[in-house]
Length: 323
Image (tube, rainbow, N blue to C red; front, side, top):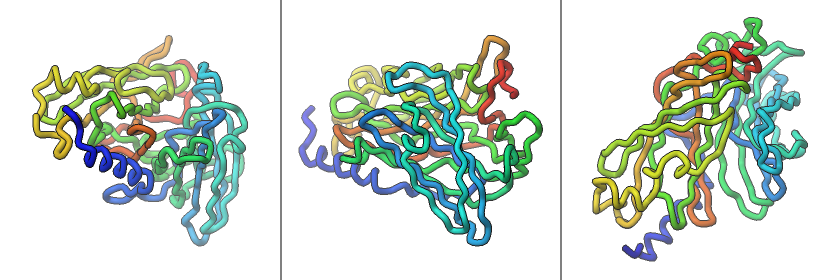
């Protein structure tokens, strides 16, 4: 079925609007630890990271931990770590280019946490942040708010890690919910960022997916990744493909409303198991962000969250995932 030109124009406009807004329903709170889902230091890509101290009375030291997953040739670098420290005065904001802050040609994710002195994380629920991705500053791709974790009692329990366990910091969600995806193919080429928050650099993580078409049919799938990854939706399962949804499911013939040739759906994901050569962790904490690509446009937003998972740690090095 041909898609009406007005519908295509409308989708392009929606994609552009998606770049301009990062509002999250219900709001988000400043925290003591921020998780930035992605940085990209490859030639031709620019990641602009911002961190802001909304506390109007207290300065704070912040440690940035860059976790590199791939080098400039897309070869695995085994979640290597690069650290920097900055000081934010009251109401201070710092915006930086990640390839200057971390000059290694890598991509992966970043977390930043409030601390005082060396190896002394502190309670400072006044940090907010955002990361924006450009293609050579010529065109913006998308912008994502950082995931905020409230500090509870961040004093290290001796393992040297930031524990997302409800004791040191707020827990991660038990389930990630993404309210929409477009059927892939043609001008749609979306990707999913996945972050393993349990186990650390010695573990691979398997994620369970429940995928719904536009007529409430549900399909299951799983995907296993190492540490951090950004993958096309169709690498997870063909259920995300527009042709598959149209020809192999009992989809709603009238949806997408206004452009029925474009299939849509939604999905939810949970951690199934994280495994190393030494042990396995059931129900690992994971995070995921959908990057929607429509023709030459991109858009992203944080997902919806449900429940609580206290198994997260940033970022273990040991084979047992505890240190």
